[in-house]
Image (cartoon, rainbow, N blue to C red; front, side, top):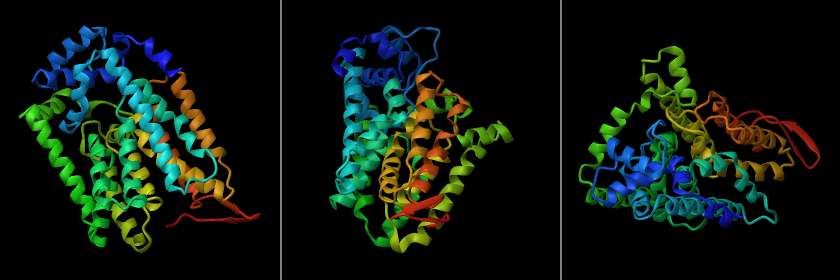
Length: 372
């Protein structure tokens, strides 16, 4: 089925997805040009079949994305899109299997629910970076918790630097945890991977970071009404006060440090760490529904916990069902109708792990209050 779909794709199909900005950046890098050049990218996208009356799509990821964009520049838009989609499908499947493995390989197929996660569908439709964020989170958890490879686990977090603003509270707690446990190999692994990546970017474009800074300032990203709670809070209070957009994430980072200190002795990245990840995604200053792929580990772990405790998983069915209906009925990803999704995934995890709502175990009913 996937092969049949792939054979029907055209260059124009690639040009109509966010993916075309990555391909255009790759083309620029292959020819030694600025991947953040508005005019050059526009010409490449038009040449691939993009309608000239549609908005220009630029790769807004920092230069750490160059190793991913460069190979695309050696392919036609159609071929590059096929490779991208197959890689995304493979990354999603790998992530779900690794979560299943971390859960002790239970005798069920609950991890396959991950393939039906609505943000994954949206990410594949737009051919976005979301699955790579998911893979970065899962590889970090798997390599450290399951394989005891802290250096490699830290290196895996390089994928999260594609959109670092989504991970600030998680990163703040990770640093605090490494310092408190004196586990510096995770930070060393990340630093080494980041330095190598930046060196690679410098070889391709010695002015990469200056070009990126200019593109972000001229591109007007901060003035877009992106469907995140932080953005709508800013537009509700004062559209011109950009700092308001970053206030929720700042507060979330402070809360994350307090939460870590409170639970430091029993800290678990597959429990409290996932809560921090969820809160960070909810308070991000800039994000899309496709970015919520990174929350799949929390959704799956919550599902396992709910089954173990005999809690109903109907809340997850309802949340995922509504989100999927929105997507299938072509509700624009810029619509405020996606504002509810990140709080909903958080609420599901808190319910599934017994922090809120009723809990049933061995026929006994009790109420569990919110807590650590």
